[in-house]
Each structure stands twice: as C-alpha cells, then as structure tokens.
Length: 440
Ligand code: ADP
View (tube, rainbow, N blue to C red):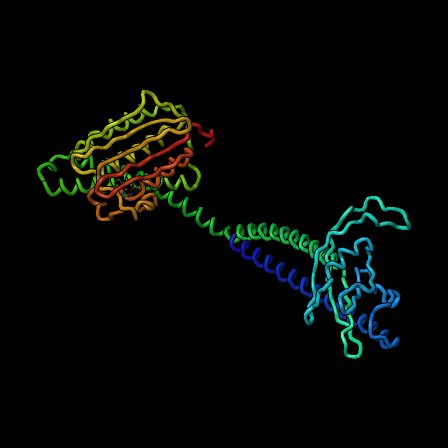
C-alpha cells in the first residue's frame, strides 16, 4: 500500500509538472507570436504613414493590413482619440462586442490580455449556404495585444490584435484527460504489481509463520499427554500410604499438582490459539439455549467462587435461543466468569446478564473487583498481557483467557468490549449477531 501510494504520488507530481510545463511553454509561444505580429503590423502602418507623408490614420484602408493567419481573430486600428479607423475580423457580425473589448485600452509595457468570449455562429455560411449542425454558439479564448502607433514621434493611434487561442485550451483539456487516464491506468498497474511483489516477498515469512504456528500446535498437543500422566501420578502418590504423615512431602505434592494444573491450562489455551491461527479450529453451529448454558457454567463455577467468598448471579430472559458453537460459547462464559471471580475481593458479587434485541444477543459479565486501569484496557485482549504480572502466582492465569474470548466472539461475528474503573469493578460485554453466517 505504501509503495503504491508513493508511486501514485510521483505519478501525480509528474502529471502536474508535465502539464504546467506544457501550459507555460505553449502559452508563452502564443504570446511571442502575437507580439511579433503586433510589432510587424505596427511597422506596416508606420511605413504607410511615412510613405504617404500623413500624420493621421484617417483614410487608412483595410487593404493595407491583412489578417495574417488563421488564428488571428481580429485587428482594429483606432486614431489618437480612440475612434475606430479600420479593422477586420473573422466574425464580422461580432464587431461591436469585439471592439468593445479593446476600446480605450492602453496596454502597459508587454501587457497581453486574455479574454473569453461567447460567439454566435448565426451568420456562419459557406458559399452563401448556412452550415447545418454547427453549434449555435461557442466559447472562444482570445489573446489580445495592443500597440501605440507613432508618426514623427507623435502618437497617432493604436492597433489591437486578437488571436484565437481556443485550440491551445482544447489541447490542454485533452492533455489533462489523457494524462489523468494514463495515471489511473498506471496506478492500477502499480497497485497490482505491488500486490504481486509483496506477496512474493511475504512468501518466506508466511511459510515461517505457518511453521511456527504448526510447531506451537504440535508442541502443545505433545505436552498434554505427559502432563496428564504427571497429574495422575501425583494423584496416585497422594494416595500412597505414609504421605499423609509427612507434611513436607504433602506440601511438595500439592505444589506440584497446582503447577501441573496451571501448565495444563496454559497448554490447552495455547492449543486453542494455535488452532485458531492456523484456521484449523472448526465452528460447529447449533441451536443453543444460552440461558441454560449460562446456568450450567455458573453451577460448575459456584464451588470455586464460594471458596473465594464471591457469589454468582444470573439475570436472563425466560428463554434465549441462538445459533452458536456450544463448546466455544461455554468457554467464553467460563473465561469471563472465572476472571470476574479471580479479580473480585472477598464478599464480591459477580453477575451475568443476558439479553436479546432484534439483531444481537448480549452477554454482560460484571464484577465489583479491582478494575482495570484505562491505559491497560486496550491491551487486555492481547496475548500474554496481564495488568499485574506479580499476581500470576496468587490468582493464576497467563494472560491468554481474554485473547481466546475475543477469538470466540469473533468467530461468531461478534465483539467483546470492556467498561471498567479501577477499584470499582469491570463489565465485559459480548455482543453477537442473532443471524450467523453458516460456515465453518
Ligand atoms: P489472565 O489469565 O491473566 O486472567 P486474561 O487474558 O483473562 O488473562 O486477562 C488479561 C488481564 O486482564 C488480566 O491479567 C487482568 O489484568 C485483566 N482482567 C481480566 N479480567 C479482569 C477483571 N474482571 N477485572 C480486572 N482485571 C481483569
């Protein structure tokens, strides 16, 4: 995206430069041409005055001067008072408007004017025949120059010459269209090329990433078996005669058991996320009674909550039927309730509220616990993020629960957000659309 953007920027810059250059060069060329023409015709008139030894322009016939080129639109000669003496134009019916443009104008040194004129073609004829299908009117761009005429050092009149430069503007218009079309075409090619190139460059990285994900998945899977063997061995050891009487051995076994359990939890969380990353995790949609599922999770968590002095509550409509992956939705409920219990003080209340609107069903889990600092709130869904790392030993957890919760909400097309105030409590809100795109 960045490379394409940069390329497009250069392209736009290139167009602006080319266009401006052409604009300046072409207009300057027109300027010069018009100036030369004016100079030349001024000289012709001066010569005429000298030849006929006259000090006034009256009587100068249009035969003395001719329209010098196809793009010369008009020329007018005025006397010292500014009265029309002679002139000619390509559109005689417009003399009044054209003369109006220059009448009384005394150009400053090297001043050239540009005017836009609406001309009518009513009288346009070829060989006395009116041309059909020509526009009734058109806009003509004129470049006008004026020059004083002197005879024996005395000002005797002015000559004004108008040149039609509409073609130049027509050219600019087409040039712009062509340049912009080319830019769009090249921009498309640039984006496409960047996409192909970045895909090629990303190849080895995605392969390495894929391998790493597979490794985490495989490693987690392989770790589960020895862990469960260890757990059952510890259970067996605890039941061995004589252990009860040895407080040191008992303590060691208890510690080992809790560490193995923690590790089992971590490994299974890692496995879930590794499967999620590799896209191997499947979502099995079925009709769920969310209220019943919530009651079930709460019931299984109650002993744990009570041992921490926390009470659990559920508020939900009579029945709340939705489409979802039963195991995942339960896991999501479990993560949020478990966190709420973990971070609640003794005597705290944890509540789960379920509700449904036309488009969404919502689950809000609130507690009166330690809350989350505003700076940490955007990060708590990141993997391995924990607000207070020193609590790991006391409350357990590895900072993966909320990442899994977010993933579960995501695979259901939903969102998870948090509202929290330190020392007041937190509310986690999960919002999931009622309609589920049925795919895995
Ligand atoms: P953990 O296993 O550490 O609980 P989570 O991913 O579930 O990992 O949560 C990440 C962090 O978010 C926690 O370490 C904790 O700091 C914060 N957190 C999550 N839930 C709550 C809550 N209900 N109250 C206060 N802090 C919370």
